[in-house]
Length: 242
Length: 274
Image 1 (tube, each protein chain N blue to C red):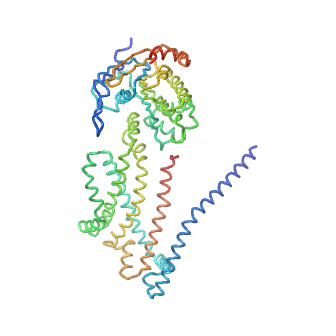
Image 2 (image 1 turned 135 degrees about the horizontal axis):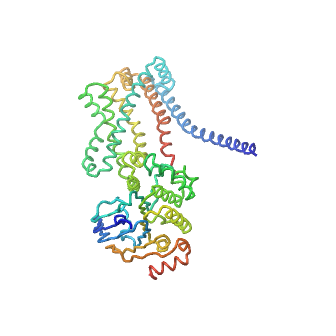
Image 3 (image 1 turned 90 degrees about the vertical axis):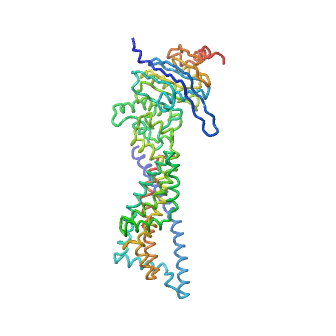
């Protein structure tokens, strides 16, 4: 039996953005309490402005200004964050961007080349990010996350604003990489189909107080996730017709 | 097969070289033409001055060139230009370093910026001459006072420019650096400084032009060598040819620094841009 401390618990009693200029104070998260099993792929979905990204920033430690407690458990030693935009350093090559994400001389450096090969980016290793398409930049960001060999991987709509085929391809790359690493993933998206394709568990958040409206398990095998009809049926089962 | 491809590649290289050559000559034609016209106008003005019986007030390009050659052969030109260049070489990096540090600090810390903003405006508007005189009064007519005076004149300028850059640093990238544990030095070198590079280069460009002009004033007021000192001698002797000879010699040196040092640095820093 796994020790209890391995579960991740996110308890946010209150998170408010203070009033600034003409903008009123905004209470984004209030009384949220989520428990996440290790090695599960949790998808957070909900309307814009319901605090999904804020939640990820808090878990990543980027936003210390909240009331509550984040318990990552003993199993989480390394966290990686794949952002909504690739956030690569434009003045460093793809390879240098990946090298810089690890401490100097870290043994994980050896993982860069195989991962680049896996996402089909070996040729672009020496290129500067702004000379690559958005899809390719997102691949690099994906590699930067996975090369950390993370125990917890946070992803904030990493495939948004890509055309359908590219997004679909990257989702398959993600499933493939995740199946080898089995990190715990918290993945934010608006896209219900994407949620069902990727997640083992879907949490639907409501606006404002950010209560969990729905907590559903996705019951699909790895192969079924690639069948559009089966995915569509599962989307309907979980989200209904709304 | 291999020979054929070698052949095409050498043809490609040749055509590239000739295109490169044409671009090069095009790049040189305009500056040479415009400088030629300027020298021509100068010659005409000098002839007119000569005709009016006042050739001493405006010597022609030929006179200035021969004065320059004479000063060069006597070794005086090299000595004084090197003295001035030495002062620029010491005070310029000091001003850049301190100015950039202040600029980054004020750009990042809002409270400090609010407090020190008026100080910065005060020093920006303090005339160079006042700073120079005060430095000489307080520290004596020494080399330290001279270099300090030049640096103090330039620091507020650099600070204001770099502050602008530091205010607009990308929050996205600093969050990325924090998630991937970059630490202070790695963040400074790979995240912060590259974002500030355009501002630093602009400050260096403007800085070089200002610093050497201030160095001349500093030398004129309280040093016994350097281009500024020689200009003073020329002024005392009413020797306009000597004044122009030293001025043009130094302009050429500064242009050389711009082309040989600043432009390559800029090209290197910008190589990632599309």
